[in-house]
Length: 208
Image 1 (cartoon, rainbow, N blue to C red):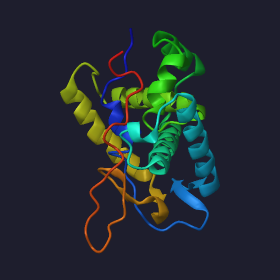
Image 2 (tube, one colour):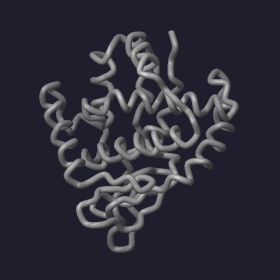
Image 3 (tube, helix red, strand yellow):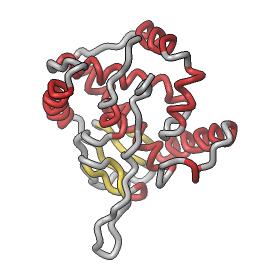
């Protein structure tokens, strides 16, 4: 059975994606390489996410997510940044590849709940899986042998270096973007913020 590497967590968490925290225009939650994620779009995704949690009988308190809006925004940013990178560099994932992967993993019925616990709204589950597959292919393009952690780490360095060409700007309403931690709370009274939303964002197939 084909399995995505656990290191895909870093990408889906945004933990190693290059970005900056410059101000964005009013009504914008974030921009990714110039592509705008509106505050209205984010609010809609958050409502969908919270509704899905309710249907699944999962409370926000049960999630290891300090802030639902930041967790959802983090996924939207990561998906868009990787889609742009893949388009620029000719990395492709077909619908058949996504479908085959879903079938191998037991279908959307199994992957969906796992994605939900990590801040992925149901409507973004397929793009989330696609992003992980793009990440895997991108690592291989940069010389990674997915069974060899050392080669994966070397490929990550090259890959993340290339991601610098796709900057991210985030509204301060949702926190500060840190290249190593993703979205974190704004510092208050001059004290650095400690909480981050990136610790547990998954590879959608880790351990399967």
